[in-house]
Length: 214
Image 1 (cartoon, rainbow, N blue to C red):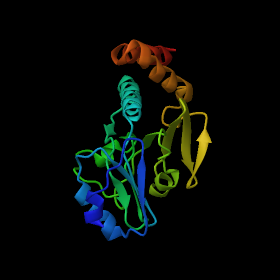
Image 2: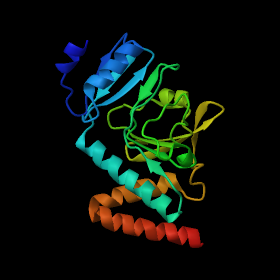
Image 3: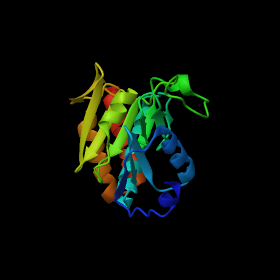
Image 4: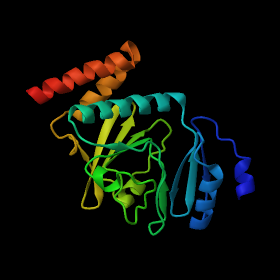
């Protein structure tokens, strides 16, 4: 399989599915692919998906992540962002690389760790996925116990909150309950397309401060 894998070229925006992949094969494929690559993976119940993001996807991911970082900084909350780190759990036969993820409430529990083991360590508190290639796998994040999943699709933000082991669509983020996240983040993300990243973040920070002071 590894020999064949080396020959697979996945164009941006496309994906390849491999079936009947054992956990041991999944681990070897991850090692073979390495960390420095453009592809992302998702693994669930023996099916491995390999996807290459579009440039638009990456741009949206970066500005969304920057907005969340700015919000956390204005709130003076410690956080750890791990980008597209591979999260996996052998017992659940699942593995995923999110577009962006944050440790917030559980930041202190993983601070300073070079490697994470989800059989021991908590999952990220927040995962962000940009759905331009139909890649999001809510069932994997649900199995891993990620408390909050944000999914962007067609410019809209859907907030999924984990309740009793199942995701429920929510109008509000439980992490940022005082803010109208579902409306504000898409607004400033779109604004960045016209006035630029730095101007957008400056404007967003001013808005956050106004909300806090009021």
